[in-house]
Length: 312
Image (cartoon, rainbow, N blue to C red; front, side):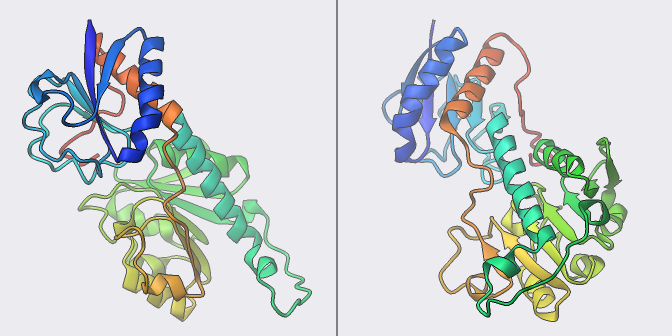
């Protein structure tokens, strides 16, 4: 039986997914037909593969669809859509994890080793500054889900003193674990580098506020590849201006692309990257989607099934 799959994403993604998704489905033993929105009747669609910035916003007509499968790891833009009543799965893909681990470890090492002072050195000064060893540097990872746990393990392997915090306690070998509201400030207290990898939910809005920054070690570093709303922007700028934080490296923002004229662009202690920390790779994402379709057809649980109550 041929399964009808609707791909709702920006137009530039059609061509690569039109090649990779049917190929991945065939490898999974599935026969599929892939359609753009408008090219198939809504009540004939078996699965919806979508990006939250795609053209479909009203899912009420897809009465036959067994699941909606997101191409993004984050689903905060879609989870509250009242018309999407079918099972919803976020993207769980090894390439996302690998990309995030590489980006996070690179930025942590950059700040740990103080590389910026040598890269930008207009006076051509001979700077004899020896950084501490990793075993003497506290790095706190906020959010120890799949991505955060992988990053924490990589930092442990580099011998950093790693703390992890999440809403509920998660034990990770080599990581000092904290949980709950009371544990947040304990996880941050004295941390010299903080990496934020929490989902965007009402509970995590501005989790990094003035109180959180004050708990960190003076002259510390913030790295945010998670979600823009995790940061209180005004409190961050104040912490940078006071010297409480030495630098912030930000990959995500409340509005993207970051608007021209935003204070982060011109601030000498802020590095802006263009939401590239963990980009979806088409070929591996297609295999992840195909596996979830195979699982759904076999009556098996979906990977990355979203808890609507929790928001992720």
